[in-house]
Structures are given as structure tokens and as C-alpha cells.
Image (cartoon, rainbow over all chains, first blue to last red; front, side):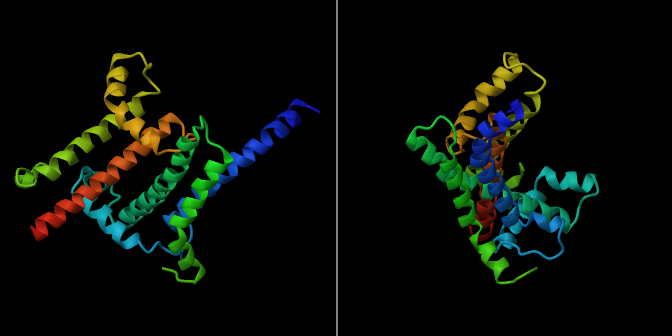
Length: 141
Length: 96
């Protein structure tokens, strides 16, 4: 058995245990933020999209961000829509990580385990449930 | 964001300014870290000032997240806090 095969079989379960939940969390966060709208035409937006869009755009309009997007000719509703998508996706990732972090601290773990990453994934799914239900019911923007 | 309302709503503007300062310091630390060594004076000052924030955010972040990404997470948390403060300011201006 070559070194590649040995490494694969030694690292394989660890890669599966860590990689799959992490990719899952990232995919769920992207879905909740409707970032895939940059690629696909019709997507389901999160029920909180409009309110978050209002918060983000009113904040951005009074900050340097607005001057920046106007300066580089990116101004327009699309810029703020993408910013809102990015913000929802990032906050899904961050908020969903809190239960996993608390679990790791309570158990006194020095590194993340497949269980803690599974908690992160479940929390991300729970946070994205309204968007998932909307997508399953066929509501599209 | 410093305007005529600053002294009326200082209790909302001041925390927002402090958060903005921390965001810029964290971004500075993130941008400079690939170019400057950890024992460089600038990096040591940046690390000393921003470490309490990074450690706090690190406590609510899974350990699999690398330390440089924790800084990005900290920026995002502070940014969302600033957005919430901004909404509180708008509400205060509208409803008194």
C-alpha cells in the first residue's frame, strides 16, 4: 500500500467528519443568504431579507461604503442586494456557530469534533428553516 | 457620522464610534499580519488593543475556525452591532 493510500485511509474519516459538516454549514449559509441568486435567476429569499436589506442599506448609505460604490460605479439596487445576501449568509454562519462553541467549552475540548461541527450544521439548518420551507413550498422571487 | 445630533444622542454615537475604531484596527491587524512579524511594534500594539475583542469572539466561535478568520468574524459581529445601534439611533430620532 503506497503512502497516498495509507494517508487517505488514515485521514479519510477525519476529512469526512470535519469536511462534510463544514461544507454543509457553508452551503446552508449561502442558501439562507440567497447568494446563489448571483448564478440562478429565480430563487427563494429569506423572509427576513427585506428587513435586513433595509437595515443594511440605511446604514451603508450613511457610511463610506456608499461613496465607495458610487466611486467605483457599482451603485445601484444590485449592490445593496448582494451586500444583504452576503450579510445574511455571514450572520447565519456566525450565529449558528455559538451552540457548537458553547458545547466545545462545556466539554473542555481543545479542538472541534465531528459532534460539535454537527451541532453547527444543525443550528445552521434551524436558522435557515424559514427559507428552506419557502423554497419547498415553491415560493420564488 | 459626526453631526449636529452627536451631542443629543451621544450615548448612541459614542459606542458606534468605538465600534468603528475597533473594526478599523481589526482590519489593519488582518491586512498587516502577512507582511509584518508578530514581534513588530505595530503588530504588538494592534494585537494588545484588539486581543480582548478577538478573545471574546473566539469564545463564541468553534475551535475549527483559524485565528485569522476569527478576526474576520469579530469584524462581522462588530459591524452588526453598529447596524443595530444605527437602527436604534433612527428610531430615537423618529420617536424621540
